Length: 566
Image 1: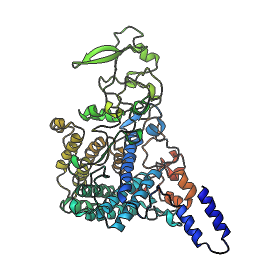
Image 2: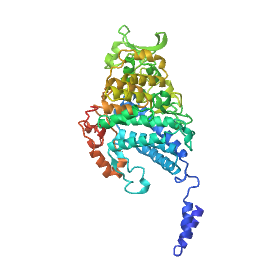
Image 3: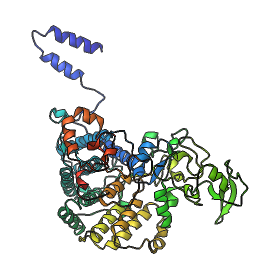
């Protein structure tokens, strides 16, 4: 501060003569000796931040509130955003654009340094993040985004039409496929040490680029079927020029170091003193019953059995079970706990047998119910309750890290289900539909360590391929556990699986987008207003908290005129 003050006084004193030396002095003083210079920084130093932050944001979204929308999970504490879609009229995309700004720096530096590997990776990440934004909101800043340092008009960027964003994404992925087509030894600047997805393997990044292209071509399949058909057939028909992810070993994933809460699995109990973030998240009954009906072994990987199951027994003395009491029992050779209930106890609470769940093994919370903390006669009414009569998530989700605890960005399962749908439903040349359908299930089973059960699972009558979109998308929805954002995009496009909003949800149907954030509505009013005008107001739009034009029940371009999902 002393040096700065002297320099400023000196400059003021020389104001009438020369400012040249003072200008140089002040510029030098404004350089942070401990900071990084965007003009000279090694792009690898920023790439690590891009990849890790993208992984954290995507898994948090897919494991938390989007898992509530898609009824993978429900919460019995802090329920409104998760169970009921009560998003307060504003959803922020700031974290996603922060990632994109850093990613643009990586790309710009890579171009300057002629580092094609970094360029290709940056284009893949740009495509994935802009794809996420337009999937969630609809029209968004794209062509003028990430240029705020240039001044107006980029400080209040236009909202590009959703169609243009998807078109730009596909163009960038095509370019990335070319940039990433060389053997690893041909790239002079390796990224092994900072690449938390693929440890610097350009062949795997290339597969990711083309797999993401399949994702976004399928997004366009209802609105621009000719373009979607040509794109998917181009990729599926030429695996040499367009390699894709076909094996779970090549999934785009990110593990967690688990050294602090910031780099650990979301909602872990290791760095949470009372484990409330873990305890408030329960399995949703919609997913539980689907998995049980299919005898799906993944259920036991994702959820714990109830600690104590209920049995209503009219042979029990009146008042039995009015006070929680767990009794030892044995079920299929396994020591378990049971709570017996006499019918009069149910009647006194105003309940019937339909209001409780006596499943011996797995019980999920129904979607958007009143008082989820006390569901199924819970003896604990606290937020993040210790309800022994509802299935908690598997104990692996208490941990900060683990072999199954990964951010999953795109997978072989997703790719195979896309190709199965393209072939079976659309009639496009994308390979044998049944082969892809079975391969999608196999990839998911491999991911979750239950491959030994595959043959028995596929042999079931209600699992055997029936050539329908509903079956393909339902299996894809199951396989999207912890990546529910992708399942939401499929639901909006197809209406599958057939989900019903619960009684306390903000609307009688599921939402199809997020609110444009309040900061944008205040600071970029003209452009966000134009974007809102392009949304289709529906009979459900009145349920939005910010008026029908910005409602989560107003349809963006991608589903306008399709009659989907409702």
